[in-house]
Structures are given as C-alpha cells and as structure tokens.
Image (cartoon, rainbow, N blue to C red):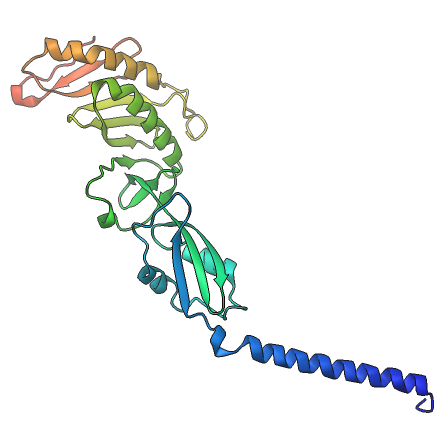
Length: 267
C-alpha cells in the first residue's frame, strides 16, 4: 500500500490538513477565551421614544449578577434577555455586543397607568407588572383598579370609555372595581360612588356570560352625566355619596348619613 506514491501522498495531505485544522481550532479557542473578551462593560440606552426613569446600571448589575455566562463571543444573549425582562420596570430589552468586551442594552420601561389589586400595576399596554409602588411619580395620579385575573385589558378599556363619558363633568376615576361576577363599581374624584352593575359587553372574558342580567354600560353613564348638574341643583346642601345605575330607565341616589337621611329615589 505504501509503495503507491499517490495513496501515500493522499494520506499525508489528510494528516497535514487535520493537523492544521487542529492547530487553528486550538489557536481560535485560545483567542476567543482571552481575558480581554470578558464582559466588563455594559451600556444602557432607552429604546427610541422612551426614557429611563426607574432602571439604572446599578439595577441591571444587581439583576444579572451571576447570570452572565461566557464572554463577548460566547454569552447567551436570548437567555440573558429573558432574565433581564423579569426585572422590575423592564418591559422589553434588546441586547447587542459591543467590541471587544461589552454589551449594549436598549430598554423599554413599563409606563405605569394604574395600580392593580394589592401590589401590582397596569402599564399603558394593559399589561400587569410588579414593581415598587413607592417609585411612582408623586406628581402623577394613578387610579386604583381591582378585578379578577385576566380582566386587566377590559379594565383599561372600560376606564378609557368611562373617562370620556365623564369628561363633561370634569370628574376622574379614583377607584374602579370589577367583581368576580363582572359587576362594576367606581369611585370618582368628588367622593361619589357609581354602581354600574354587570357588564353587557364583557362576554369575551366574563365566565358567567356578559349578557346575563347586564345593563348597558355607556347608556347608563350618559344618562347620569346628563342628569347630574340638574340633580345637584335640586339637592343643594345635601351630599350625594352613591348613585346606583343598575336600572333600565333611571337611577337611585343615596345621601350622606350626616344629614340623617338616606333615600333612594328613582329619577
């Protein structure tokens, strides 16, 4: 076999090729794992159209401590992204490499829209997130929403509709609650509580079926808005604390017990 020059040449070429490849792989491994490529820099940037109010380099360093494996070449960016997005206030993050030993994090923060149940919040996308409420902007009012799991998007939708309907009265929502039977109750900025009853349009999320014993959300609120200035004029000196809108053709009012008179009169 070795008397065949062509075969011997072929085998020799294979051995040389394997040797060169092994050498290149070894050099490549040595180069890739040089200390100069260890991740030592991290730059935070807000995504276009956003600003960073709650996320800082210190927050990120604390969140990823012990979770950055590898270096510039070997770090697992999808895994790191998933971990960072579990941090408070971070809605999305895009990560890219920065030569030779850094990462660029482009972050979109949650923008708080309202408080949700006991200790969570709803962002402007109608998504629930958990973060420290003490970090909310003191100069911004955040209404309190309460509702069953999975109802947060409906809550945001109805709150927007209700705010539009109430705008002629210059009243805002302080608290908005949705019961397990999908019945609404709202407390307004003037201290008035509105009892709205079951939601006729919540059949998509309402496990009981939104049309059962439900009344029109918008129609009843519009009727209240139209009648409220007249009602205030007729009841001067008497403080109305609750309006029950669960009637097809009217509503009932309850006066403050300070005047020793609680009455419900159909309008």
